[in-house]
Structures are given as structure tokens and as C-alpha cells.
Image 1 (tube, rainbow, N blue to C red):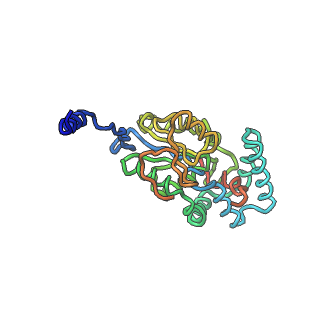
Image 2 (image 1 turned 180 degrees about the vertical axis):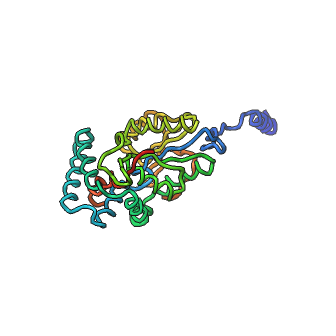
Image 3 (image 1 turned 90 degrees about the vertical axis):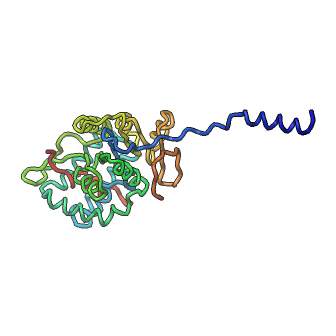
Length: 288
């Protein structure tokens, strides 16, 4: 074959070859205008660095709501919790200790203090990346709720300050605007979160397969499993493993690494927890 013919033959073959396949574009998410969708965010270590209850407890201790002996007791309970893990008897002890501290205080007083404490300790600890995720849902016209075991008043203050729709949280009983030292129902924790989200979705006429949920903890796997778009944010070891096994999307703002690209723009990215135990009831009120 002559050189010219070889060149022509090569050109002909190259023109017949299909162009290299491009990776399929990731679908837009959240979907703008999909009002059947919403987003549910855990609070501690998902939206905020650390525990909101701890930060609120610091504010209560600063305002002399409890004494050093209470601080020591709560610190020991927290150490036990970290070493031995969750069990119903220990959690009940922590809850009862916290409720005893706020018993007799007025709900309005604790709400006012909560606003101050948010500015003092919490505002600067919100993860910019998670806030950007929540804002993406709001910009798409969707509602966004915090869902947390923290007191509902704490969660409501944070949700309002972040411009979110609202919050679900643990509820403490009050009579005549004064805390009684009892809970209404049980703490909003683990499977109880999933039940609350399911009930809210029914009331709001949401399609859970269109919804998203975000959490750092394996305790929230029941809630994450409810929705069509589960996200592990700053995940603990168990949740990271579960997310990997189920192809859930992961984002870790603690190190800046992105375990999986999720298609939503994200912003750049303690003392004793005894105060958190005290705050477990300090910002709660009667469910209406």
C-alpha cells in the first residue's frame, strides 16, 4: 500500500470509531420545585461540631444553674457512657439527673438564656459544609427540619437561627410554664427519630423516597433508611461501614476529604459533657 493510501485508510478508520464514552452526568439534587421532598438533619456532629447540649450546659453552669458537685456527677456519667456504651438504665440515670436540675425553672427563662448561649457558644461551631447542604434544599424550595434527641427548644432556636423550617426534639413536661422534672414520652433517639420523621412526612404529604436525611451516627440508621437519599456526614465507624456497604453518600468535614462526590455544593470547611446532661431538659417544653 502506498503511503498516501495508508494515510487515507487510517483516516477512514479513525472517522468510523465511536468517540470515547463520557461518564453519565450525576442527576441534579436536590430537585428544584419538588415539594414532595424535604430534608431531615441530625444536629450533634452533623450540623454542629460537638454536642449542642454540652454547649448549652456550659452556658447554664456559667449562670450558676448547677453546682460543681453536679458537674462531677454528670462528668462521671458521661465517662461511663463513653466506656460502656448506651443502655437504658444508664440513660435513665442521666436523664433524671438533668431533669432534677431544671425542675421548677420557667420555660420562658430557659428560652431566653438559650438565645444568648447560641450566640456565645454555638453559632461559630456550625459546620459550613452541612449548612450549605441545608441551604441547597431551601433554595430548591424544600422544607428542612432538624431531628434530634436534644431538647426541642434548643433545636428550635438553632433551626430558626439557620433559617430552617423547624425542629423535632425531646420534650419535657411543663405546667403553667414551669418545668415539672418529667419528660413527655421518651427521648427522640434512634428508632424514635424514624417514627417522628415518618409521622411528619405523612402530615406534610411528603414522598419519603424523594427526601434526604443526614446524620453522623449509626444510631440514626433507622431514620436514614427511611429516605431515598441518605447521607453520612462526619460518620462514626459503624455508620461509615454501613454507608459503604449500602452505597450511601458520605461527606466528612472534619478533615476536608470527600468520601463520595454528592452533587451539592459545599462550603469550605470541650470540656466535660456534664453540662450537656444538665441541658438535656433545660430547653424542653410540653409538646402541643
